Length: 444
Image (cartoon, helix red, strand yellow):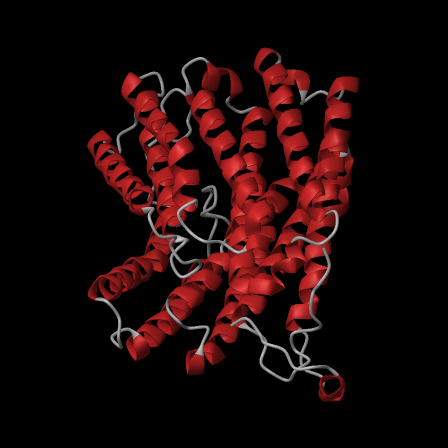
């Protein structure tokens, strides 16, 4: 489906903040996907690592993972926060674009740092050296803009509950850059499963509940609630509160996944299989976001079921340190998380969300992710019986890795299609063209 309207900048009005958030996030998605394709090539032809000197596979891996998380999946959340606190409107909107550029600049510094071999050694907390300070500063700049916008409008004709909730949100957001800085330090380590060396069931439940909380918060400021669905909205919050109490009761010790308390408590997340679609069904969403809402709900369901199965005793012992967990990670990031952030971006962009529904990209992206997950799951299953399967090149292993590379190339192509379309949303006004183009309403 193509654009229904011409370039949003041609009527002479400022480019909406949501468009800039989408553009920055897509720019990092394309770069991170290109790095992913490079990594897939290096796995097929390891001798190519010699061409890159010190910039070998291990360093590109840090760049790929962190840019997918802090670039592609985080910047849409920044756009949502701008909307939630009203920073994308009025005088505060002028500060949003510098914040986005500051965030991207911090990611660029991080990229150079990781390629230079600087890392804390912690997955997704690789911030080290100057980058460890610069990125929290970029997050703090975001907080200042949100707080300033809220102080300007937060008490004007706002219900007490909404005001208190946003104030609590600001308090929590203020802690995030501090926690990122502290968690990246060499002296702080999370609890581990002594049988796998990975996260415990309590740790995975804790991180999953953070995702659930974000899922429950997202509809606010994005879509109006439909009448007559009060319990569809209230019940999930009650369940989240109960699971939070359960998570606290489990503690943060080094517990094995063989302990029933670990895998049974993690199984409580299966309650969100019916709760999440019911909750989102209680809100009136934009019709153009429908396919992406269905996509992220499908990926979410698959993630919950497979995540619990993979953690069970015997299953995790078979799949640990294999490509099977690589496939599951991609299911989480490229399947569920990417579909969710695209859904959020469409709601933020309004009618300009057509950029994510254009042509073939939707089917190619989701089909490639599904193929990638299936390939890596099968490879992981083989590795569980024979660890040399993906270490020693062979016909079956090479075929899997070639298909994996093809899936990565297709995902890169889809992201390039979205980025090319998003350029039309942030192009600066051309007075000459604007005089020839009909005026039109811009979604804030």
